[in-house]
Image (tube, rainbow, N blue to C red; front, side, top):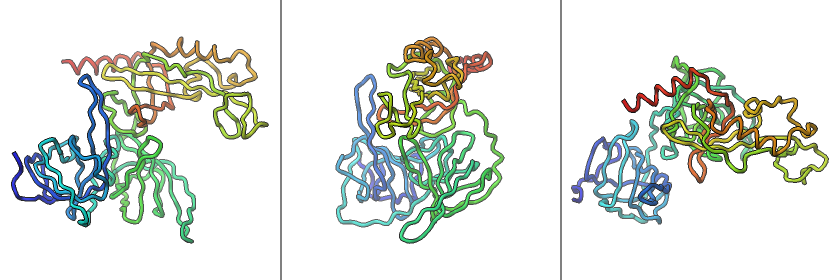
Length: 366
């Protein structure tokens, strides 16, 4: 059944609504492939807006020729709640018409979201959290100098990189940031503040400790999350690496081609699959996180120690990591193969943690 003749403005949309018509401008659009037991399917997601606001959308039937900036009329679409946010859904029964040459001004709204809920489908957000250590540097463009403040902002659900162009941030302060721009770099999300953003000091009283998450609940590439899980497989490329002490680049030979006089230093790349009973995730870690687990002292870990070699590291990884339970804290990234975790703190799981993990998993089946 096609929708009524009425065309709704974005700002009037509620949830749930069925068989509705809208006209809007595509603010951004992304494509994702999903594989399951039924095969592979493709869907689009992004933001569509008009002069009254914006709304995230998911489309299971959308022309691949549509792009950001296109104005479209959509008949017979629907809305419903998704994780506390109203979302527009476009399926095979919807009709989409491109309106070439038509211009539309979009009023950009920013949804208030927890850091752990951020996703690329929401380009402008309002977040609340605590500011970490702040770094300053000057940036010059078109003859004008601007101070850039770089830091991380965190709440009880996660942390994310934050850049502020010209607006000073104070370490340890609790703030609300309205109209922050969300973007992605190297598989991780980050937000930025410019002249259109509003930063307000506030008292949140948030308590930030270890953010334990079930692997199945991890949905966004944000930082500062902790999992408790068992290593069920070890990647074939895990082992000892050689790096240049000057540029830190990985080298295959005994010297760096760009810095032939620089000494070589050791590093570890460990790549493994973690399972907590709710799901699995690919995790990786370097020597800073792995040395204690492998029983190697930092001062021993160098090319002068002939006891350290590729076979020894490979054997230690299989002996000390594979099949064991760990608590891993790190940052989640999104690559071509999906979400993965880069661990910067890894410790053997305690009896208390094992009990807590078991009780949580048992509760899911009661």
